Length: 316
Ligand SMILES: NC(=O)c1ccc[n+]([C@@H]2O[C@H](COP(=O)([O-])OP(=O)(O)OC[C@H]3O[C@@H](n4cnc5c(N)ncnc54)[C@H](O)[C@@H]3O)[C@@H](O)[C@H]2O)c1
Image (cartoon, rainbow, N blue to C red; front, side, top):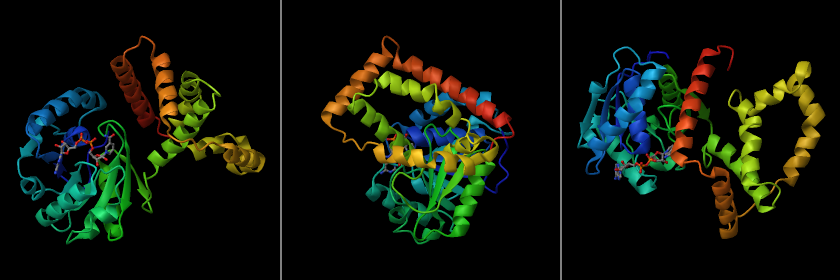
């Protein structure tokens, strides 16, 4: 994996729960200095334990030159973590009042040109930046869990974010081996979660209608289109379905039927009955397997897949 070529050498990680600790481990593995902060009692010990747990995985991916756990510093005061930073990644609780206050303090402590990025899954960055003196450098940098493994980061600017801040954020993430995308407008759930939600909606609808079992729906994705989607996205897959005629041919040929399916898709409600059916279906599918074992298998396969994709130079 590439070494950072951006100007960022020192990153502040503000709030070090699940996502903050994973980001901290990733930044360290890319050879950066990390200044972390979190107000909860025992946060430093938990952070160091989580980073140590992620480290062997990151070593397998390959550490950047100079990468070291010794470059992690923990500060009780947010201001002390943020003041020397070249880039700030915030990972506090998903509440607008807390985020807005954190950004007000980060904005006051950071040098004026330093990017302040929020990991928020669902809050509008325009609200987060509202109390900042330099709102133009506030962006959303939404990772996919776990950030130390999954390359995607969704970058969104708010009402007052500058185009330069978005460009610098994209460049930083790309320089440390991430795959940033620019979400050009603030929409609920950004891009990837909306796409997942679209699939879940129909999966829940099919269970609700008794069309197939939970296990068969999982099989349909995990042993069918999911394999292709892990290689390339939905549009490129569609293009490849068209043979020599490519996307234009597919849309001429299958555009009508696809639209018919759209009109037939369901819009289920998350009723107590539906939740119960899905939970029962998952229990059947799990059988005697342990969730922790499945998680471990998933992570090994994910790592192999990410590595295989990185070495296949022809992929986008
Ligand atoms: N968990 C996910 O799958 C996921 C994925 C992508 C993005 N995110 C986003 O990342 C952010 C963090 O989520 P998480 O899952 O790591 O949550 P978490 O609960 O694991 O961590 C939150 C951290 O914030 C700290 N905290 C509590 N009050 C605080 C305050 N007033 N100021 C600063 N820190 C405070 C807590 O001590 C804790 O360490 C959220 O915005 C979430 O939407 C989560």
